Image 1 (tube, rainbow, N blue to C red):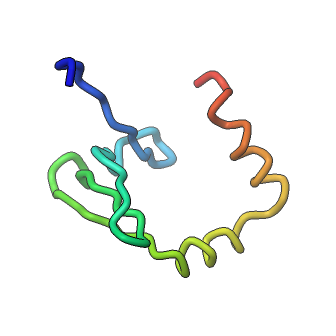
Image 2 (cartoon, helix red, strand yellow; image 1 turned 180 degrees about the horizontal axis):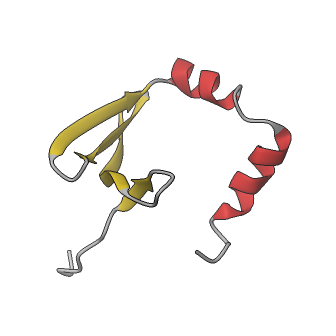
Image 3 (cartoon, rainbow, N blue to C red; image 1 turned 90 degrees about the horizontal axis):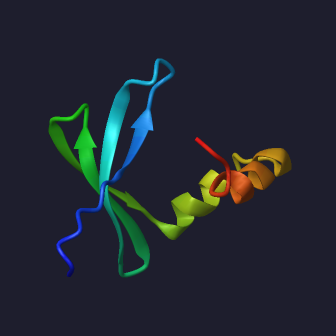
Length: 76
């Protein structure tokens, strides 16, 4: 490693206050594991299984799906 610090992503509430700081997203077998801190203090490990990922995709309509595809290329 080059000693470069990688800052994680943040999930914000409606008032732009930090709900969760995501430190790492990694694969664990067939699952996705998200590591971070909730409210800046409490460590948390969340697991997303393939079945839950499919269930989450059912919540997204076409318009939101297209937005998600272009979100990475938008300015903050």
